[in-house]
Length: 568
Image (cartoon, rainbow, N blue to C red; front, side, top):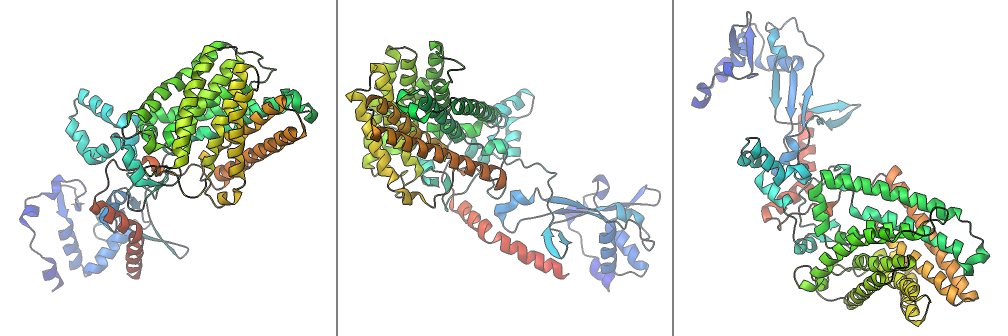
């Protein structure tokens, strides 16, 4: 009766397919190896020896190598299931009761996850042997250039597109417009994916390190290098001689800042080489684009903070080298602000835009220290004109500006940066801390105090690597106060200089401790950079539905399937 039930009519397509021509198609070599026998006939012969079908299947499962291909609980996780393949080997390779030992050498493919018990806990076996290719479209050599090289090698372009997926490549190779960043992301730094959006990269897996390394990591260089300037000013300022500051802190901080700049620049250069598509997306990001000024501003800080024991006067060609990339970036960014397109200032204005303004004043200060005249005045004028426009745009908070949150955030300290450096630059150009220099200084001091009295609003904010970029405005205000103290020396100005310098040093030290904890203990200093993984177009309803299903019900479906399998 059981043999009759097993003899089911085979479809015509399978009848015309010879299992002998397919390697590993459940065929066994019987005896001399010249007459392959299908697995079905082998099992039927085994039944004639008095064993049941169920028993033979269990015997084969115990003796064979089993290859498991895990399929997802929903279609949205199909790409995950394809990479979860595991070869399970069993120790019992030989069974005297098995008349066909060749069956033990065969492999079986199952479409459900294998359940492995370790100390009573259930766990699904995954395989790391198969490389995840979902990150390839972000690589430098995985885009259009790679397909052109494939054409030169004789491989048709359409085959490469079929292998990688045309739609996915189009979503990644073309950077999203500025509207998509505002629609898909939220938060003061536009770094959080909205609930209705779908990421083009896996959110449940840690990405490669270079892909997670953001451009705002240069904020650490800004914070440390500005501290080197502060301690140099405390050491060399006649108004602060009563503190008896040693030149050693300036020397240590300068070398530390130099090592940080070299390290961060090297890592980000590797990202440009290997993940250029991700760098392009950061450049098109309305907030991240301002951090491309950070490495050059940090280099300007290093030139200002150079210890007297290393160099007293720097050559002017250093100023021209450092200001050239800043000038090129300003032509691009300021031109977009004026053009009235998608990146007009009224639409993309956010406090991080101050980074694109500060470079003008820092460059003017360095040029004036080197004895230059026309160049520093030129950049001071450009920075002053655009700072006024940016200040008014951010202060009145236009309805079209959706990047500023209602609650306060450390990003608002960037309001203090530009006027603090501007007053020192003008004082150096004029040779005196006159009334024109005191106007931006008092503006910076008022903005500093207006933010400091609202310290409770900064509690409970998630730590971010970009916080480092917000430390140098506090340091700039401290240095400007010391310069003002040299012009107006009394107990009030000296006390204010000491107080602001202590607050700045304490803030940088605290951030350093937080950074070390998140980097080496919590190991979450560089999380997945969701802000560069948004889709080029708004996801369709089907994709959003699959995203919700995969995030809410996949784990439940998998647990239910595991519990069912464990009963057998």
